[in-house]
Image 1 (cartoon, rainbow, N blue to C red):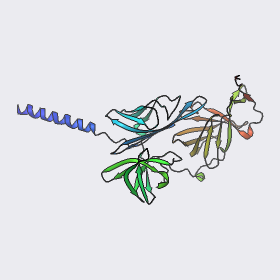
Image 2 (cartoon, rainbow, N blue to C red):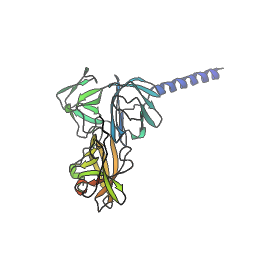
Image 3 (cartoon, one colour):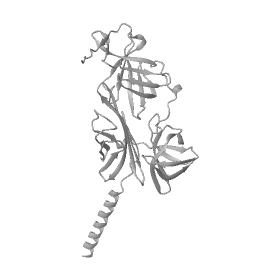
Image 4 (tube, rainbow, N blue to C red):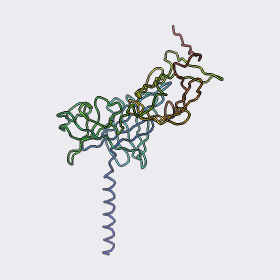
Amino acid sequence: MNALRYGLVAGASLCLWATLAAAQQQSLTGVYAREGGTLAVLEGDNQTLVQYTSTFPQGQGMGECDCALSVRKKSAKDWTLSTFQPGGTWTLSLESERLVLKGPGTGCCGAGWSGQDGFARSSSTALATCKVKAAQAALKTVDGANRGVALASGDSVQVFAESPPPDVVPVRVVQGKQVRVGQLAYSELDCPVRAGGEASAASGAMDVKALVGRWVQVHRKGKGYVIDQPCGSAIPAVTVKSDGALEVDFGQDSLAGKLTAVKAGTAGASTLEVAYAGGTRETLQWSVADAKRNVVRLQGGQDFFRKGELYVRDDARQGIPVRAEACDEFE
């Protein structure tokens, strides 16, 4: 009887321990990245902030998500979030191997977004560590109110910011046993390593000479090429500058970025690592498709370049016909 009673007590204790262990979820604070998307989680005692950025195909161009979210409710399997822009309720599903974000997309993504995105837990990296350089700084709420957390010059904070960084960035502050989350002006911080964990690209560290210039999109037509001119839009193009700055013009909108690494291959090929202004990143393969006509192919990522697009250097396009799309006339 005593043995039975001991077994019941021990079993109950184990169940209680398991319940408590499940309740104490491992911190998800960090930056989760995939080709073309980033999810940052900043957990604190007062609140948890989630920042989501991505690019996705939208018509003939690209759409962007830039979503600032706050966690309203947590469970072992799901978090309920709300966006600071109009748009309703979002959820973050905590699967064993990945985090899945679902939401309406209204306000911070727009039309054409799939409604969900996933990030592998194994892709997590730490938030950047920066120092406060202002003599005094105060942590702010997302709506600009004072959090009551005073910071002094030299204090360390954990930061997530896109590249290039916006005026205001989400930060996480650890003071003793207290952890607070809020926002600070980026100008009040000293970040020797670019926020988000990505080192600044030094133009001298990359050989971009063969890539520099404006490249106009072309399509094959028989044994030659044709340049399509959409109605009411510019001809899609990619521009690479000598300092590694990159602009992708989709015709009606554009996306700015920066080459963070260029790895030369054979026969004029290169592997490009690109960080876009929205914080997303992708790896592209630059290869020579037609050396005589100076035509190259850009392929990679999960969005616009995933199938491979052809481009001719703008100053070498002479002789390639332009096929103008007829515009509908409305009375």
